[in-house]
Length: 293
Image (cartoon, rainbow, N blue to C red; front, side, top):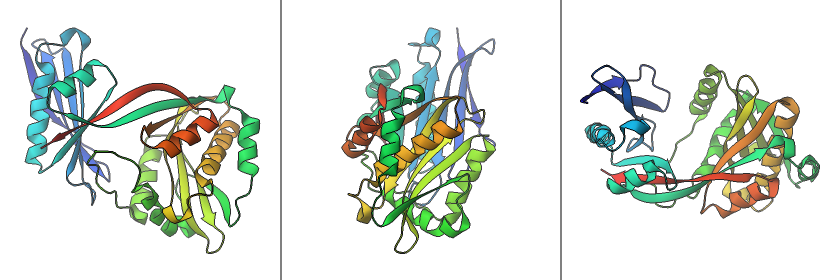
């Protein structure tokens, strides 16, 4: 049965990207597959695009994925992008598809979940209550308080040296406006943003942060968005301290929340150690692929 491909455009770009999309359907209009191409627009990532392709199980091996990929690659090149990223679960059809179409593996990821009902809250509380000389924990919901906004934005460079192996992810440039826009985007989706941060008591500046996003109905699973400590403040257990406090607060504020999700590069041995210490259990592995345009 012949298929047709229809190009679409996401009508609502975000503060950091915009999307193109394609839909493949049969001659009766029944969807058979789709592709979404995210074009990053912020300084430091204008070279990058990210691709998601999905083909209905019954429609695979009919060239649909290849047609969608061709459309996305053509568009990415037309937008002046040099790198196209895509992710697939390990040993899945998507994994084999990307490898067969010229993508190269650049990053291995492990996804993990902390079941809150089984969390060792006594141990987590003990970690939180252990003081770190020269530092204190702060937390907020939603948008960062004005008195912390400038140093919180500056602390985002803690993620600049996060292990990305061979991925050409670029450098995300953060300022106060971008921090505020990110929090606003989460709120508009109806989700709840919780941030735990570490403040240097010597000057009151934020030197590390850990973000958690919770569904608006406060059920299901929350998602960790990032945990980082500025290089000059590492070695004091601050990452573990913040993430433990994030777990403690989530358990207390959202009693019907099932668990907390996180994903970590396999090469990020430090963060993997933190997750293991706190009781996160691996759920699956994924591979980040890159196509050089």
